[in-house]
Each structure stands twice: as C-alpha cells, then as structure tokens.
Length: 389
Image 1 (cartoon, rainbow, N blue to C red):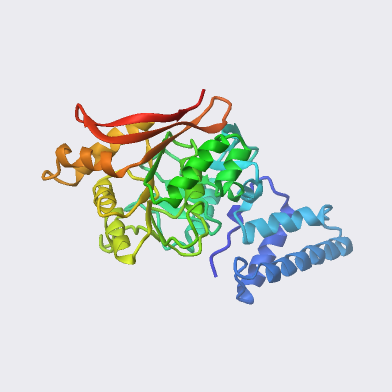
Image 2: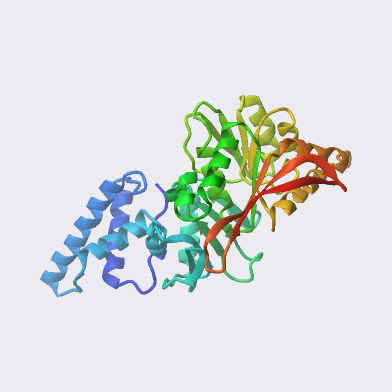
C-alpha cells in the first residue's frame, strides 16, 4: 500500500480532522487496505472514524466535528486522493493546476490563469508528488530532477525539483478533459466551423497525413485526440508518446510511451525507438504525440513508406511547423540533408492545422494549409485551405 502522510492535509485543517486522518491511516495500514484500489472500504472506515470521534468528544468534552460530510471528504482526499489539490482536480472547469511554491498554487480555467486559495507545505508537495508517481514506475530525485508521468485519469504530471529550480518543487498537472473527444465537440464550442471538421474527418478516413501545430496550451493534443477518434473503426492505430496524454478510445489501438533510464543509466526507450517498433505492428495510422527532436526523421521515413501519420508540433504558424519539421531530422546525423527532407515533407504531409489561443483564453483553429507537393526556394510550397476571418 502506498505511504499515506498527514502532510497531504492543508496546514490550516482543524486538529480534529487531523486526528481522524491519523486514525484512518493506522486502520488502513493494519487492515492492509489500499484506498486507491478499494475506495468504498476506505470511505466506510473514514465515516466510522468520524462518528467515533464525535461520540468520544460528546462524552469527554472534546472538539466536535460539526460538518461530518466535509470532514469525510477532506480525510478521503488526504488518504485516497491528492489532498488539498483533489477538489481542483475534480473541478470540471479546471484545465491545469500548477504549483510554483507551497503557498503559490494556480489553476487555468477557460484558458486563463488564476491563483487558487490553497496553501501547502514543502512536505505536502513532496508527498503529493510521491503519491502521484507511485503507480507510474517513474521517479524524481537528484539524479533525475525532471519527470513526466501520466496519472490514472490520463492527466499529465510534470515535476522539476531543486537545484534545477531555485528553492521549491515546481509541479504542473495538465488535466485530461474527456468532454472534447470528438470533432463535433470542438465545433460545438466554436473551436472550428463544421466544414473544417468535415474536411479533417475525410482526411483521416482517406489516410492522409495531418499535422497539428500551435503554441503551448493552444489545444493541439485535444485536437489530435479528436482526429484519432475520427478514424474509421477498422483502422489499426499505433500511438507513441513520451508520456501518455492521448487518452482516446478506438476499436483497434495500441498506445506506447517512452521510458526514462534507470539509476544505472540503462533501459531508456526513446521516441525514435518507439516509432521504429510501431512500424512492425501493422499500423494503418502512426500517431506521434509530439515531434520535437530527431524522431522527426523516423516519422518522415514512415510516411514515405505509405503509412499515414498524425502528430503535433510547437510552432507559431502552419508554415513554420513545416519548416521546423524540415529542420528536426537534421538532428539525427550528418548524413541527413535538406535535399531529402524537404521533398519528403512536400510529398507526404497533406494538411497542417494550426491552433491558437486568444487573449480571453478561447482556443480555436486559426488556419489550415496544404502542401502542394512542390518545393520552392528550398521549402515545401503550400496553399491556404482555410483561415479564420
């Protein structure tokens, strides 16, 4: 059973709640109950301990717990969830949670950030991260001061610790929002017009390669997930990611993620390796969660063998995304030149969909371009299919 610590409780929680949490922790350990695996049994124990505390307090003149239901929620969050952060993670309006310092916790709602009324301690932050990483097989320590991991609900965790950060642990949790799983869902919230959704749906059905570009938090991963959901049911899809983020469902799908090296520096699995392995799995479509390094070469080689693809890239425009895709393969070695890469992009990429985020936090598709198949002045020539007016 994972270690349960009272550090997960906010420092301004009532002493009675802390007392109950301590008793619950002792019972969970004694009865060998993992609250993450047996939440119903854990909830019964918490309710019993809250009632026991109030019965004892009535007879001995101790501190009563006035709001038993709230106490049960707080204690369950501390032993089975993620303590004071659990309410934020359960809030459907919160898209992302990040911690700059124990007393500086922020959330993003509708694309805009705001400070959350949550105060933690350094121990609480470390305990929460430890619990989040417990089931992932990943670690964060002095030898590995960064970590990316996927939480059980599909949300992405990113952590950086000192001395890479100045003093406090920096934690980001980008939540998986299941509400926008399809292209029609994105049309409904105004992210794209119906005709673009139809264009993308047809492109996925016809086996065309679609790239999704945009800045951080512009909605690239959400759109990529919607594109995968638009694939025909008989298509076999293989996804490769550094950390699982594309929590999509399809009849025939295999999802793979990379692996960090061990303490001995062995066992690392890179995106380049995953792309090569994916090609041995008979994919009808290869999906790369994010192209950011030399794996761009392996993706291009796959596209030029007739396997359609889909991927995201960080870029400021659709045209810049294609230029970036042409530059990244050069990181793979000196024997790779633009003379091969640019024509390969021009012939194998069919659409680039660029996502943007407005000042008010609204996310939308700002343009769609299509390579013509020709190369002009050393770059893939494109034509604009659609642009946001």
